[in-house]
Image 1 (tube, protein in one colour):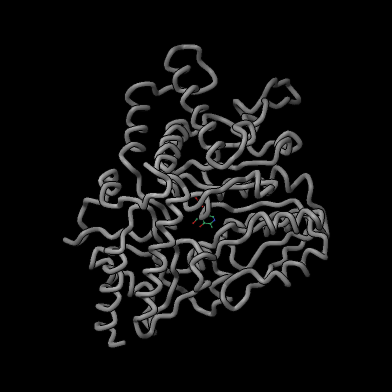
Image 2 (cartoon, rainbow, N blue to C red):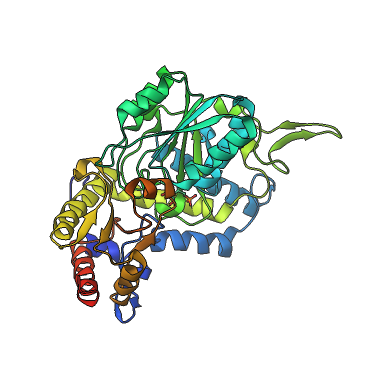
Length: 412
Ligand code: PLP
């Protein structure tokens, strides 16, 4: 397929068995991709193939099954690393973004953070990029500070610069907000933070699945993402670290596989990245993540992004035409990913999501694991529709019709 050609959604949908099921007698319109995406048959097949053909532990056994499993798992590490422009030895397989931030909080944070140090996050973070730093601050005596936002939901650079003047030890921010859709200029923010002497962590959970990402160009110290948000299985994700940084860090979890030698009173550590993958790893899901990467690469990430911008343009136009809708985040679709959070008159987001479900339309409602952001928006909850490669303009039409139906029920 040519990189410039638009995605043939109808053809691509046939790769996703779940999309042919009905929900409450209606066609499934799946618009909860920021929570988790669906899996193409090739990813499901990869899991079945592993368990039915070469299920074995990795890095241990010299038998055929063990060697095949190890080759597939390490092959997936190579693909996943290359997908984001990293070296395989700088990529640790983790359960997901949450485990990655926790890993850094303990393995880097406990060694480097001390009383009075400043940790900077932003008001648009997911809880998984807030709570690990709150806990690190508690353990170390460091102080957690938040970068403010502009009224349109973009990052307030003035506020960022002011906090950088306090010489923070760590700056952790999201590449792309799971609520506002805001895409932050990760390379620019990392350069500014580095200039101020800070170590940087970028939460790429909502970026890697939706746009080309090159961690080398971003030049962060840490970059984290989750497999299940990019067509891969749950329970697998990645932490990419700057060259050499993993060597300087203490281990996160300890036990089998992460050691080189164990003596009665002390141990030495395995090479990176194995030093950070204690115990039996998530082999099947790690291998299947490689299948998801292959699938996305066969589409091309430029096309994935172009497809989502086209859906966003259409959806924002259609939704703003509904009286009583308030959309959050930047209105310029070049600045946002395929996420639209909104409130509809005084209809509670849970009620709206329930009515939409009756129409087969799956959206998320709630605080989206971003309560500080909800407070900033001054709402207890919001509805969120989020797109991916298999969504079409028809899905947007179905969303609009279902919202209008809710409007009639609630007499908006
Ligand atoms: N960061 C962002 C921006 C997210 O949207 C999410 C999940 O919704 C996470 C982090 C946490 O990802 P996971 O639950 O896969 O660890």
